[in-house]
Amino acid sequence: MAKLLALSSLYLLLSVCPFILGPGANGGPAGKCGYQACPAIKPGMLNVHLVPHTHDDVGWLKTVDQYYYGGRTDTQRAGVQYILDSVIPQLQADPSKRFIYVEVAFFYRWWRQQTDRMKKVVKQLVDEGRLEFLNGGWCMNDEATTHYSSIIDQMTLGFQFLNDTFGECGRPRVAWHIDPFGHSREQASLFAQMGFDGFFFGRLDYQDKQNRESEREMEQVWRASVNLPEPSANLFTGVLPNGYNPPKMLCWDVLCSDEPIKDDTNLDEYNVDQIVYYFNQTAHKQAMHYRAEHIIMTMGSDFHFQDANMWYKNLDKLIKYVNAAVMFPKLVSARFVAAVNDIAVVTVCLEHPSQHAHSLSDTDTHTHTHHLRHAGFNSQLHQRHCFSTEPLCSFEILVPFLFQDSKIQLTVLTDRSQGGSSSNDGSLELMVHRRLLHDDNRGVGEALSEPGYDGTGLIVRGKHLVFLDTVRGSAELHRLQAQAEYMAPWTIMGQGPGTAYSSRPKHVAEFSALKEELPPNLHLLTLAQWDSQSFLIRLEHQFEMGESSIYSKPVTVDLANLFSAFKITSVEEMSLGFNQRKQDVSRLSWKTRPGRRVKSVSSHKASSDYVVVLNPMEIRTFRVHIKYL
Image (cartoon, rainbow, N blue to C red; front, side):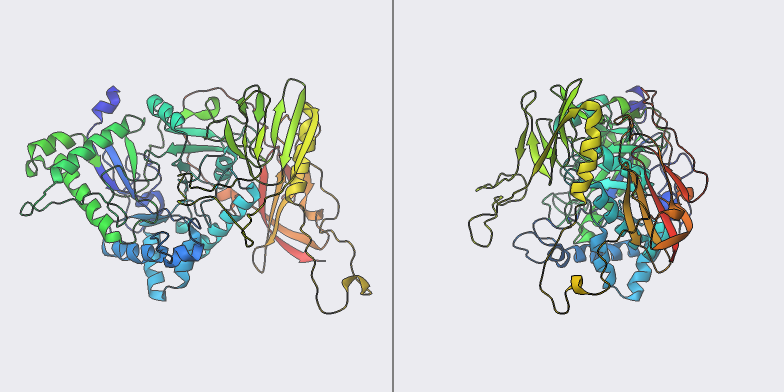
């Protein structure tokens, strides 16, 4: 606490950079993207990083295109095209302004409609680090009801667009999941393997947040996998202080109702002193929950910045008057000086904690354990790893759910995401279908009632596969069956012209792209043509360390002799998101408090570029060139 009080001077910045790299590293020369584009900080002061942003749902109350165009205003006033149309001129007019953007699905639509001149302007803003992309996926995916293969694919799609359009300066360095309800350990592991330096989220259970605030553990290094060797799946993780909204009374969007900053003394309702005093109190209160001398304030919310001038005009005033109170106290009133004598308001970079924040906690011994433990059994809520910030008595189940004692395990596989609860030891309730006749006041603003075309109501049907086996033998059942259920082909029949396929003289009755079947613990996750010259291949190990005496072992595969229709002529390993060569991935390293260490599988090196070794739960990604046989 003494350190915090000593650093209590405030300094405000407009910021979009992810991290402070140390004295002298930021505030670099103009024209540089990445961390060098961050504004200069004030050592020895509490640096408040104001981050202008918008959160644009890729489908919620309206369709994606209705959100883009701004249609159906009777449902929600939200038009993403107007946000980008409004923000870009503001950035172009003032080199000090910054903005972050996340949802590539919308940016892609907007980009296709722009002139060459506007595209040149935007590329310059990206090159200068003043428009920065965070997350970078096609959307901000849910973490509770999604399958990891779909998450990887949609992230790769967004990365591809950003890389093709903006090059290295368009590569996101920070994961940004501000709206998903609950957070999966596997999601954090995927982000780390995609090369992200950090991860920020907004929603967590209120009791968890209260505890983290009191313990000053709103920032931590998350050990997202006990299977992968450290630090490959370690990820700096920060909990945002206000969800993803601005502090109360400081929302200056057309969708807000807070008072603007009125700074003309010749007019009525002058409120600069009041706003700055309130800001000072708010910043110091927030700083009490963080260990570093840098705090973040998200200035924006759902579909904000449709009129960017409102936000930027008030942010400019806020920065001007708060920083003036520190630098030039004679220019403001005595009350104003007393209020801000401790603060520094920075500009707009996602600059947040210090890279060498020695007091950050390592979460391996905290709440984010591999399995949720409740009432004497394990609750595995994701096909790979996951935890939820919701209370343990109610959560989403993808696959599988399990009960176990020291010897026997009961496993339930579902064929779709379902709500589940366990209010008593050994009990399980699954919500196959939910229908409400009245709004439950959980944000949608309408009853969860889908009458269907005939008005009688939609009916959801599914299946539940139940396994009963020993604890040691259960993984061999449910892991392989879960993959078979998820990857099961859909057979669709229909009438068509021409001769029946089966009656053709040279019809193929059976085909496999593989020369021989893969080992059960190895799965070909992705095989896709990337461009005219190369293919994308992902291989994954499907088992965890120690859960199977047979399959929880490293497995080796020879890419050169893997496929039947073509021969691989060259191999280059890539990051999981396929936007960096593996050898070029360089992530920030973090100093943490010593904590309990869990032994992970050591890395096994292959004998050549074509011979690949995969350890438990490892996914490896390759760009290959081929020659058809």
